[in-house]
Length: 323
Image (cartoon, rainbow, N blue to C red; front, side, top):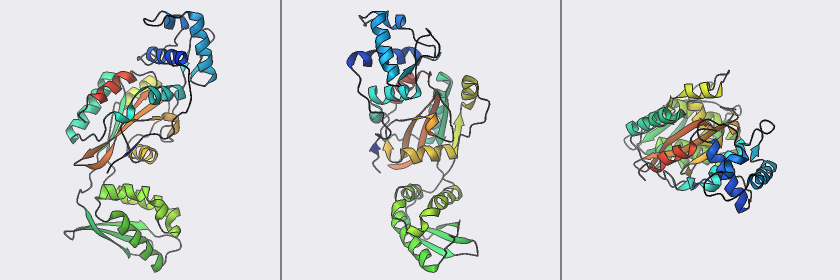
């Protein structure tokens, strides 16, 4: 499966060359692990910038008007907004060209998660699918009992995965036959992993009477097939660095939500913590990249980090990965 380039929710904004230069300088000073406000005098003294503090302050004011910077305290310097961090990453880094069609083995992906977590004090959440890679031959949907339909996912060897799903309120044989026909279109010649992702991507083509319950059925199939498995490394870093007083729910549900936002996008994609209800956190950036095995999509590798983390260095580690 070839994934599309990540262009979703891209912040469209035009900056003049001087403001671009100042924005990048602020970001590099801020995203260095300590997250201190950046003063105009600090930018003016930077090597390669032949400008005075007044010019920097004017540029910072324009960037603040555009919502990319803000001043946490009077005369305290500027700090990037969450949108500013996302704009910087999407506009000035070739994210779609990094870790394209990444195909690590499972031990390598776990080791990489530990490396990033320990070196940069960030959290990594990685999906580890467990479903069979065999291609499906056909799907049957049976009237199992008063509350359930039974879905049979059958491979060419005749082996089947049997999953119970809730009956719709308007249960009829005709609707069940329509759903079975649609499921055969979705899963035929596909692996279980790919079939589940096609259920999400092709939801619009399902029988209209199934639309209201299709997401629930997809979730039930995912959970019972055992495809939803994840490891979380370095969660304590988020709690410590963000001084959280609430529990965050990382793992399967988080990966599902990220996948819903980024389905079929290759390379590195950027999301903000506030864009994901499973996180609901400000000042948090999520870097996400899909990975594959034998050409088949498997799951996603996500780095969840405070906005002031050493993001450039983290991206440099991804660039070292074999293509």
